[in-house]
Image 1: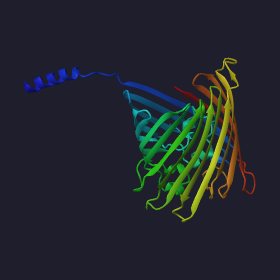
Image 2: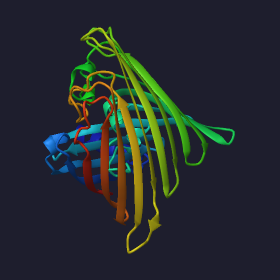
Image 3: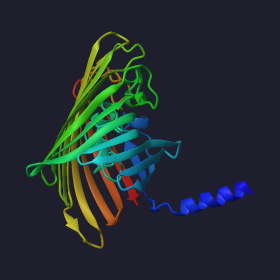
Image 4: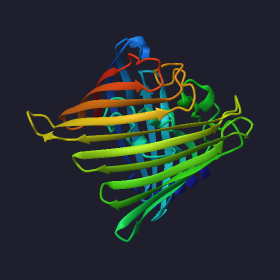
Length: 351
């Protein structure tokens, strides 16, 4: 009888609490990519269809100033993995805090990484192979944006686990991303962005840490990005450099690279299409070491590799785009030009 009375009293008290509807929103993207490399390129030149990415993103507003976010991704119709999962607390403008597993605030290419946001089917090589975009990391971030006269400044400062020693040893530098730390050291880094006018932003970012098991070797990144976009025009560029103390050889390795792209919607609502958008990108990487099979190029090459990519995007409907791309790769220090150009087709929807 006493237990029943306590239960009834508890329910009565619960009913007196203010109730708030929790808003949950889901978004996502699905793409299919077809690529055909020449004989010296990826997969030995075997053309193939690839269900490259499926994303599911969820946002939960638990309070006016508190939000939860998660991002699930499956690649090549394989294992589903968490790409981001964090809590945002907007304490007061311009001060906010992010806790969880989030993208490292290094450059801005991670915003254009998704098939639904990037202007060409392929990735910019330096952004994938140097600063391992998208670099998901566990930790805490302080962030915000505030006006300065008629302009804006935004900032992000993060303390995270950082990369591990696979950055040097693995065939793919992005294999060094980790969800748990491999040493006692933490990565400290951040980005400052300046917005002098609508659509234009310039940013400087970087981070530094000890990345090896012995907490002895330094790994440092420096990044400069610039972007300008309107409803029709998209211009972006980014330069990144990493400096690593190689724990395998005791040498210092400097790797740098950059990309620039421009895309413009030349026609809207023509022939029943949503828009037609030519795109052009140039990217280049100086590995500062023997590249191995990291870039689908000459395994013995140690030098500069450049690529120019021509694209055409056709959107039949809103949130649906078909991309066509041809990429030409040039190896500046190879014994001879490799037969490793590539053709891509990609279909993508976002919802």
